[in-house]
Image (cartoon, rainbow, N blue to C red; front, side, top):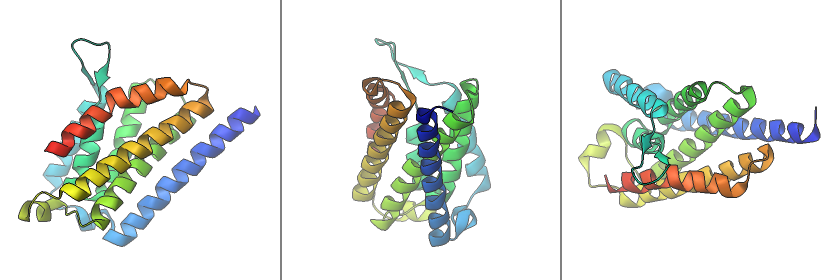
Length: 195
């Protein structure tokens, strides 16, 4: 095995472990997924939305770029279900996305899952720590602008950072990774802040 492959696999393992540890912490702090889950039909509908969004990104009219709805659904899942259930939905969406890309191996799949756990988990954690509410509590008050904007910023920042790590270690140009993230992810993150 080449040293570069070992470093890449070790990094992927570290990111996946960090994401799993974050999920364990969130589960402990918020009582697990059952503590946040209030409506099974809503969860099933959300899973259907994520499945469709993963398999069919939206093409832009004037550019050869597509917009991915998964980041908006990630943040929305934090608002509707809380950070623990949102992390599980993120894992499901990353596995479905990897399957849709014709399964290129376990290491890239683990990188996607780890990145999803870290980005969604950290956004959910900062959202709740700053006083953001989720589920039925969200409807009972004013819109929590501060926590939502902080969650969006942390989500986007951690996504860009982890995409750069992935690009650097897998041999892709970093500029391509940054452009991809900015074109596909950032517009949806900014749009989801308005709603």
